Image (tube, rainbow, N blue to C red; front, side, top):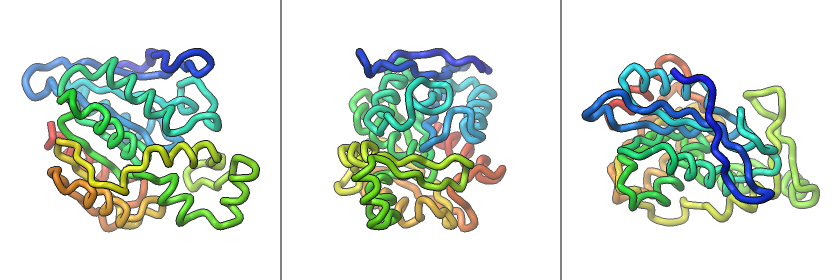
Amino acid sequence: MQEEPQFLTVGNGARAREIAYLHEPARARGPAEAGVMWLSGFKSDMAGSKAVAVAEWAAERGVSCTRHDYSGHGRSAGDFEDACLSDWLEETLAVFDACCKGPTIIIGSSMGGWLAMLLTLARRETGLIKGLVLIAPAADFTEELMWKHRFSDDIRQTIMETGRFEQPSAYSEDPYVITRKLIEDGRKHLILDRQLKTGCPVAILQGVQDPDVPWQHAQRLAEALPLDDVSLTLIPDGDHRLSRPQDIELLLKTVEGLI
């Protein structure tokens, strides 16, 4: 399996950045010619346990697999604090267009679930996206989960006045820096305020014990897709990461079912 990433230049002029990606082409014909694309979560990268498990699963079956690091993440260039959802979506679209030439299942974790939805809505007419697997999808999280519900008046004031807030992380010693730019840019991409249609099957996997994305939030996304074939699987003892062996097994079975 390929370990050293390739790099794709995304953006122009001062906004140009080198995006690291890994793409393994399909080695089989028939249904296995379908590929998968992995989209990581906020502050996560393509070397995470679920991303690697998906890549190994794809390699074993001869299925193509594409994954990348957003700017300011992993091995890609860019400053995390200077980036926002518009940048990460632009990069995701660029990698998809460069690598995904056949039927593709998009797998998105947390923020990657939001980006998976935005990617699918933007590229629906290509007919290439054949299914979505969304793990604790954090659609609209900057507004619905952070700004409206998690941030106090003091935190909102700090963000507006200083442009940033350091939020302690349960997953790293380093805090998550939430910028005013991230919040304001996120409002350009909100999707839960309208009826959506992806035109493909959508499978949502959600931990009931998730402290970051409540299961009701995933249910709200499912309800926004009344015209699609949607399944919502709740894991009673599941957390946000859903990276235990049994969680990853469920993820891979779900992907295989769509393939």
